Length: 181
Image 1 (cartoon, rainbow, N blue to C red):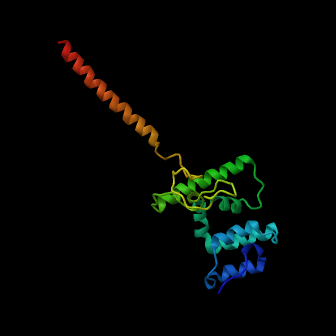
Image 2: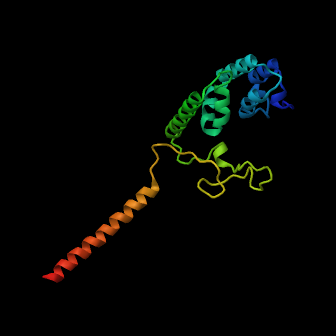
Image 3: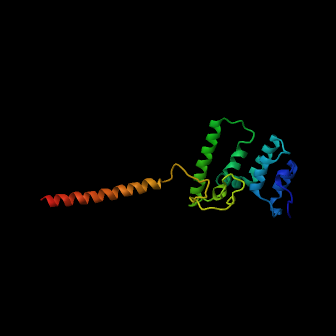
């Protein structure tokens, strides 16, 4: 069966029905459902929170992975109905970043090409590259995932060059001393 409607046009009772019977619908998309909770203009704030909490009971593990796949949606849903200061927002984003690193480590995932991080999204509507999947580190990549524990590759290269230069200088010093004798 197919839902046949956009999630952001559903009522509260329809959300509960589709969440309960999600296996019956071939076009059910949990990320689309979660995004629509924030976008739905028909629902009141209390209804949105109630639907979010109910969806968590069924899709909790999937929702936690959205910290990695779509952190903006995760942030919007976790802060739904809360008045937040700038410091509170920064704290939530720091927690998301820490959890992203934990998820990558726990699942032993080496790459960081997920969801929002894997697509070109420069903000210009007429950009021909919008939505194209890009390799991390390429010129077209807009977002990238980095952590405090990441190794600084530039520093390693500089250290390597410095050590190489010192080795050459040591050899030169020894050679000069031998010539002086």
